Length: 400
Ligand SMILES: Nc1nc2c(ncn2[C@@H]2O[C@H](COP(=O)(O)OP(=O)(O)OP(=O)(O)O)[C@@H](O)[C@H]2O)c(=O)[nH]1
Picture (cartoon, rainbow, N blue to C red):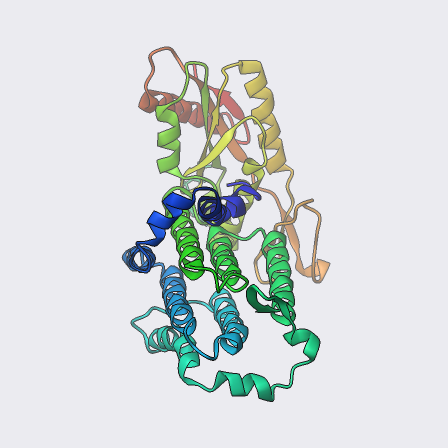
């Protein structure tokens, strides 16, 4: 999913529920009648799916949302409301950040149980601790404590740090091109934080927790699709996605099978890890090609799918791919790792310790014949690949 699409997709529950809340008041009132059962049911569903899929990250996040929701619901009647509304978002933010930073242990391990207990009981502890006294002892400046307005129970200090955290977090996620899991957690955190300016509004916590839970559910679903369709090493879609694509391929199309030349020897010489790095690099070279969709077929074989059958254009493109791979300098360092740089020239460490090598690929292309099924098409592309190998490798061949 595109760089901007993922955050928009994961923030869509928040936008949608806000829209429903303000623009469709009768329907919103009917939905909020179902709170808190609906909210807890949504979180339970997310947690259940997370357990089923063994995606612990989502389990912890769902539990955190549930314990936060419980506290906010309870605190509304508390005399400590203002003080808790100051410290609770801080605690929740710290826990969310902890979940982003730490590798998530299995809940069946000791550290997993500990993490679960902290997430479950740290927020409710605020209900029994003398939070108002603690806040008084902090002697925060007047400007920090000044309420934003009479109608919202939040002060300027809290609003500012939330805005700072949101900006910093957002920049980090964009800079590192974060995955759905991290965006999902950010979306959930943002939704929860939105609760605070509106904490006095009826069912505000229910609405934002519902939005946060939906964001988690969407990110969990997209993670499952990712695991099912994307190859972890090369980050290219894998065979299952290829078969799906081929099943709806048009008449004018072509398929190319390609494979690394003498890869066994390469692995034997430089090690399997270096071989893996080469496959990763091939994945990124092919993902950056226009006019085709690249898949990892399996092992050191890749498949390229084209939505046209112009042989001249295909030959030019495939020649371009072949050259891009053959000309890419792989720097094998002392630790036996190739430098996979964008411009292909970056070298680190002592030049004397490095060795530059090249790999080549052979490509076999089949233009789709009328009435031909997927299996026959792939078989002909494979035969063409065999032809390219026989012709000396580092070649492009077309099926007859
Ligand atoms: N590092 C690494 N190697 C792999 C992976 N998948 C398959 N291979 C290796 O790829 C090699 C394929 O070898 P062969 O099918 O004999 O072909 P080749 O040595 O490339 O020779 P030609 O294809 O005839 O040029 C085997 O040694 C596999 O172990 C992988 O994911 N990582």
